[in-house]
Image 1 (tube, one colour):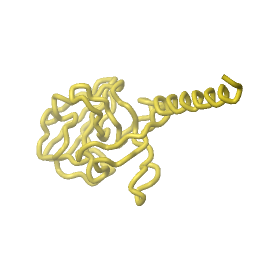
Image 2 (tube, rainbow, N blue to C red; image 1 turned 180 degrees about the vertical axis):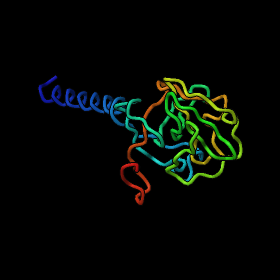
Image 3 (cartoon, rainbow, N blue to C red; image 1 turned 90 degrees about the vertical axis):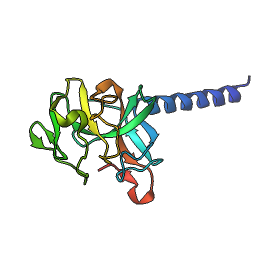
Image 4 (cartoon, rainbow, N blue to C red; image 1 turned 135 degrees about the horizontal axis):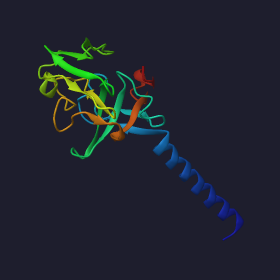
Length: 171
């Protein structure tokens, strides 16, 4: 193998390693799957996920992708309650720590509170999440999802890739 071929292969290997490291530890392209986050995100919409700084950078209203092993796929949801909070849904309204949750979206009144009909304590390593399409979302209200452990959070929605009218950093 001559010097030029070796240099080329080394360059390709280096680029591959950089791409791998960036996609696993910095940012990752993710395509939204399903309608549970409509109208904020639609199925098939590409977004970039922030992967660095998790879970310490997470806050109320952040949209996260969660690895859900029971469902066998990743799901996208909005953080409503942080570790140590209490959450309850009464008369279609979300309450966190006894106060009406400060929604950053226009969300419909919730028809089915499910587990959150009674006050739920969020553990020290957990988050309570809801889909933006509140009446068409499997989320922390249901036993098969429940509170989400921090280690299952894959990334935080950081940059909208498409459609062009929404292109830019998540607000």
